[in-house]
Length: 246
Image 1: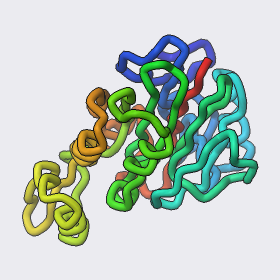
Image 2: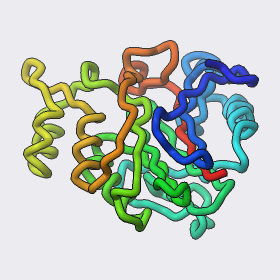
Image 3: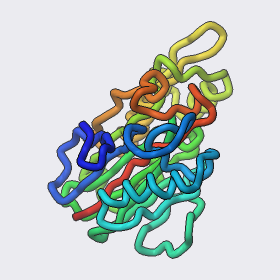
Image 4: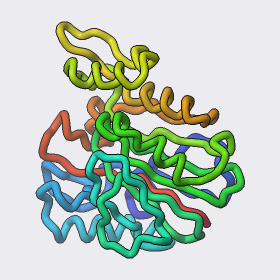
């Protein structure tokens, strides 16, 4: 449902402590014109900078502080929010242990994954497309949180769904080389494959020792009313997934 700003948000369906707050924005709300129409929060996709600034101001009105944005590169680098003074650090995940500090990632088909621990003292946000998953971004994020994985929980935000994400043999073979159990995340589709990012993330998180994983029921590609999708539209906006400690 839209909030008082007109922005429609998706909140994690997890059993996080009450002081852990999080959501993913949709494209609903905001002031960008087509083809970025709505609440585009990405600065590198061709939208009018004035619209992006207004959209980010709307987002900021829902948060305790300015998000520490990343220059996402589909890798496995994780930064600590408290230690990073660099503007737009090249990384694909960010962690924090201090209240009021907002961790954020942008996406438009790639999988955003939010983390917290059961005590409500550690959080993280990760950007996990297939390249990032293959590079180990989720394992690196779990390691950076520096606690027993059994004490962690994760939420899988909106990403391209398993019926829409067609890939070639290069992607399939990459994941088979990493772990043969990844075969459950692929279905043949002619001479190509349909890949399930959600299943790949669940398998990775389970192997890392995280038992409580929720989310994973969306498809950015098929739901053009709510979500941006790079694969569907090519020129498009970005949603933000944010998390912070109150």
